[in-house]
Length: 397
Ligand code: NDP
Image 1 (tube, rainbow, N blue to C red):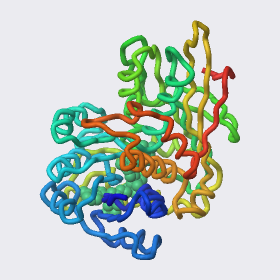
Image 2 (image 1 turned 30 degrees about the horizontal axis):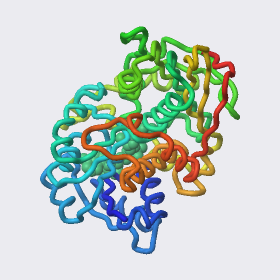
Image 3 (image 1 turned 60 degrees about the vertical axis):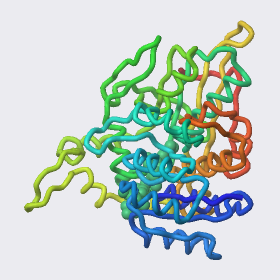
Image 4 (image 1 turned 120 degrees about the vertical axis):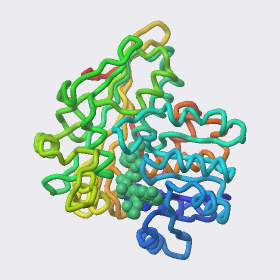
């Protein structure tokens, strides 16, 4: 039985809070804190029964955060605010002596660059304090990394080729909307692509590599190579990998909107003056786009995210595909959130459960694939995200 503090009150948080609240034998007391307390109160009311306390906090203010952590006394902080706050929340966890979990790696606000170096640099500090920092425990990164660890543990002597495939086959009926925080999402997908090949990164222009891939229960969808953060830790933790790529599906309509947004300067992250006030165009755009947290109601279709792996077992070449499909409507009916928030929030809750129940432990900073994948995947299926496997099929890649 343990207390947890959850930071951030967006779409992902709604799922994490509900899932944690449904397991009182693991999460005995829950506090939800965010920049806007009223958003925490809405989620707490949805859960009901006084299970969730709420508070206001600026997660970029270390003394304020540390004081909140000390006053509530959790064992773990689950960070589902934004990647900009990773380091300040890690600092506060060290100050207050509590474990840390997040779903996205640190990004500096002024540069659209995401990599693990900043958070891996906390290794010695977490070790010295005997605390665990668990990085990237959503779906991708998160479950995709654990799928890879599971394949390495049970089915391969060496993994040689890894393709992570992320398809959103859903339709929310809007002309243009992102499925999680628009600012973070647009920063991510407008960067150059990058994939791992023979010991080095190969850079591509955005959306340069395209292939139609078939997804279970969805069919063929145009899929593009993007850089995604789990590639960085997976090629480090599984050094036999010769090639690692990340594919994401985008419809033509989405890409047209994105191109226009970029061409007219609305994806800029440098400040511009507007009527005497400094604004950042992408942050302004976020305010006028649909809130990803509100997309759920009429969202049809499914997500399908998995790993397609080729490697060697007992001297023979083998292929393996492991994936989860998640229905937006089923996610909404259960939690009031759409499938992308659901597929991120459920793994964050399970990662927290792994730490609190002692299945995963250790002092230092860890990526999820460094721990035993078995208890996590057992819980993943139990708590809403069943997964499937195909052996020696055609990977299309
Ligand atoms: P939202 O934008 O819906 O929610 C973010 C929340 O963080 C908001 O409630 C916001 O407050 C709060 N917040 C922002 N800044 C601060 C601050 N300085 N102090 C306190 N609270 C703050 O995002 P999502 O729920 O869509 O995403 C949450 C996280 O999940 C993101 O980091 C995203 O990158 C990650 N993610 C990970 C995925 C994975 O598979 N690994 C997939 C999808 C998302 P306010 O309400 O006031 O704006």
